Amino acid sequence: MTHSRRAFLANTAKAAIAGAVLPAMAEAAPQTIGPQAIDSHVHVWVKDPRYPFAEGANVPEGVDASVETLLRRMEANHVSRTVLIQVSHYKWDNRYLVDCLTRFPGKFAGVCRVNPEATDAADQLIYWVSQGCDGVRLSPAADASGDWIRQPRMYSLWAQCERLHVPMTLLLPASRLPDVRPLIDKNQGLTVVSDHMADCPIGDTASLAKLLELARYPRVFVKITHLWSLSKQSYPFRDSYEMVARVRDAFGSQRIMGGTDWPIKTELASYEQRLALYREEIPFFNAEERKDVLYRTVQRVWPSRPK
Ligand SMILES: [Zn+2]
Image: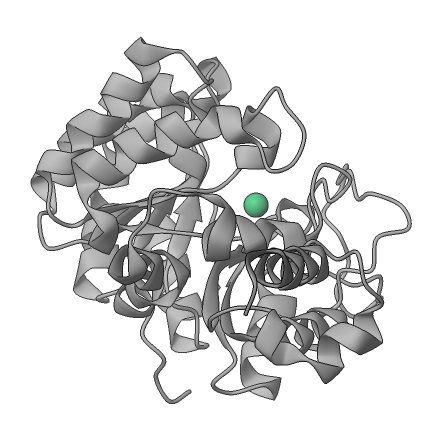
């Protein structure tokens, strides 16, 4: 094959991955999509009276975030499984998430949310895990409204999570990382996942240092996600790669994972583009590291299991 022919084919494949072709064509030629993937981070919701949104929920208009739409996208893009993260629109009502897990066995893991300020938060977790959920997500805000993460009751919730053998997922800014250190110290058998590289702003080395410090805990994992919102550039967001490299260097590829965060802010990057970042755009992963990022790490953290 000539060099120009090879380059043409490579560019065609890139265009396909970037979503520049019709979806029907992408479905007809899945071999152009790239390797298999498991998506560590997606949200689903529906406008349905059976699953009312929480009071004051800020649900974006005109977004089709149903599980059926997600499944079609997974199929078209060679994504075999997805971790569903309970969307904040439903607050602590995880029923739609649970229904998705039940209706499509083997396709999803599900991370619930419980009210961390409730006295029965640990019992809420027991309930949702009994319903099929595979862990919980906490999201303390940077301001005083997130100070509950320092409350003693956190210890019982985290201990319960460890007893249930499900991961603790954290959506928090880097400024909150020191608050979770004592909880990680206390529950060393607990798998902990930091979402979106703690949203460390690019170039903020002090914030990044707080995240990298957690690499000394062997059961802490990081989602190398949100490149599209952290970057100051357009796709493929190259200014974010150095941070990804530093996270990879500190944690190793076996503790980092890609994810799309679909359908949040897809105006910044499409589902296909987000997958393409991990499949081919981020340039420094070797073949084994890429497998870790695409599916092996997430499979370790959220193994498929019978529901
Ligand atoms: Zn998200």
